[in-house]
View 1 (cartoon, one colour):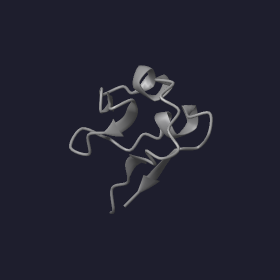
View 2: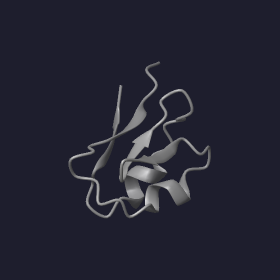
View 3: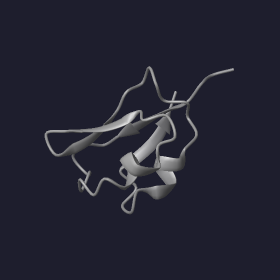
View 4: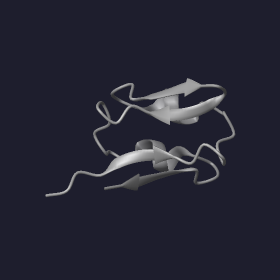
Length: 61
């Protein structure tokens, strides 16, 4: 079974912080005013994907 992980398109990120506040494992963080996902912590729950107002986060293999 392939585990999907969240990935932020940093060119699209608005730096709203919504994804950071909803991540249940604190895998999302802000760096240089853009959200990033720590792949080692991400559990692939897609909460951040569904929270992003512009679709800048996706789940990838």
